[in-house]
Image (cartoon, rainbow, N blue to C red; front, side, top):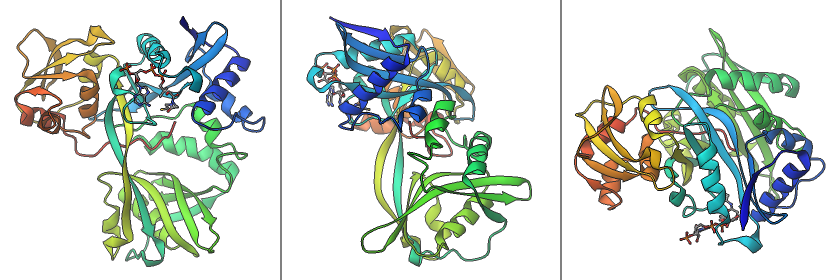
Amino acid sequence: MTEIRVLTDEAQYRAHNTLFRRAMHWGPPTDEQWPATLPSYEPGRVLAAFEGDEMVGTTQSFACAMVVPGGAVVPHAAVSRVGVRPDYTRRGVLSGLMREQLSTLSEPVATLRASEGRIYGRFGYGLAGRVRFLRIDARKAVIPGSPAGQVRMVDPDTSDELLPELHARFGLDRPGQISRWPGWWARALDRKTEAENRVMVVHSGPDGDDGYVCYKVSEDKDFKHHMEVQDFAWANADAWRDLWIYLTRLDLVDTIEVDAALDDPLHWLFEDPRVVYTKDVYDQIWLRLVDVPRMLAARTYGTAGPVVIEVRDRLLPANDGCYRVSPDGAERVEAKPDITIPVDLLGAVYLGDTKFSDLAAARRIEGSRFAEADALFAGPVAPLCSTFF
Ligand SMILES: CC(C)(COP(=O)(O)OP(=O)(O)OC[C@H]1O[C@@H](n2cnc3c(N)ncnc32)[C@H](O)[C@@H]1OP(=O)(O)O)[C@@H](O)C(=O)NCCC(=O)NCCS
């Protein structure tokens, strides 16, 4: 019988990391990588499934906070390192891990990145945010005009100090953005692995530092230079535009690749909007409303008549029930529902990426008053999570 245990010591954490990496077809962590990985194991948040003494499955979560529509920031669990040993798959190991994790999380919401689209809906996670993967033809990218502020390159030691501070100041700019925890920074700033050859540039305007970008340029066998934008945050439009002027005027660079929100107006910066090419749109945020009443109360709503939504949650039945949502907020009610929705699809509409009417058209939900529900849940900006975990 599979038993789920909370891991407590470094040897177990390393076995957990090795198992997860094997499930992903990666090699085990090297002695060089391990010191930067260890801080990402937070006591009490690391679960493993055992068959007797054998570890056969893993998951864990990181405690942080997430922006919800309207700007409130709520406690959030970033779920990661989900893996089952290849010789133990399809025997319910993941199901056991998910049930245990969801019933013990103290945060009202969890998100994860899914390796495959069919895994997590059954556990109440819905596809709540997508991202555009852009390629920019840097040789042809012309942004007219001059920069409004100053851009400076910072050395790695300064960047290690500045990045967490600046991200905390203006990185939480959209629904779906999450704060970064110490273990996340330990890995991101580890020069032996991730941060090798990373360049950081900071923008300052009249009120001081107000934007940054981290990038890495590599050269291929045809001597073409490709830039990967790894981290980008800004507090205002001048910082955003100036940093793009800097990136597109760098010598030698042929192409720039960057992840951007679905509504990012980047192409409007350039004389020729076609220099920005969408290579892919992929699902990014899979969101699980762990505490539905708390999460419905945490966000704001648009202008429309009230709608009663009946939520069904197979794994966490405390969420079952009807909620009246109106421009004044959300509350639990005893009333006839307008819409009935499973919790994974409520997660999908929560950040504003998906509309109730689209789910109805796809015959995924039933009811009426979908236009009102769309207007209530719509937000002025598309969700995004710039922090990979
Ligand atoms: C994905 C993974 C964790 C699933 O673990 P598992 O122990 O096999 O899952 P379970 O046996 O609990 O499966 C539960 C249900 O999900 C389904 N399922 C699980 N993985 C699936 C997948 N990749 N695609 C489609 N369905 C899947 C199972 O068929 C089962 O369905 P059922 O209840 O109708 O029988 C495991 O296959 C794995 O480690 N894969 C490689 C690493 C990976 O992708 N990790 C996820 C990173 S985000």
